[in-house]
Length: 199
Image (tube, rainbow, N blue to C red; front, side):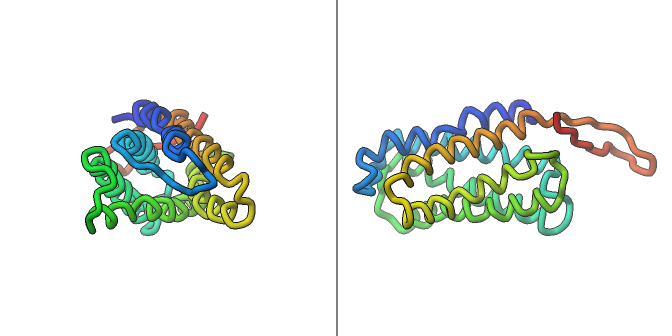
């Protein structure tokens, strides 16, 4: 699966957390999230798109090739897969009151926390050019910014948080979509090296 396809799938999935929240939180002041099979489906699209972005970042070596860069992307992939298993669970048995349901649900916030690590790794690696280097961290900051707004500016937290997530994950998809891979044979290597140019 090349970056164009991964980026396209990521772009499709990017707005669905925002869409889902507006549909399934009828009264933001009441802080009630109504879960059903449709919400699980929207969440599945969102997490799947996010997963495509992470897979593409791994393909282009955006987090670098040191131990931290390699591990943080692997951990991110695992957490997103587990979050998506919860989404499938939600589609089949919405709001199911079991231990497994709640354990899998924990990987939603964990995936956001791990994204902070991904963002730091990408900035350290300096593989992406210009503003694109900071987009993964922008995604990672969504959870702490949302939490901060909820405590300090609750009247605007709901709207800002939803707009933020749609913009940040769309930008992440754009970063993936606009990556171009150039394979060439280097002296002393039997295989192909992968150089990444961002245009």
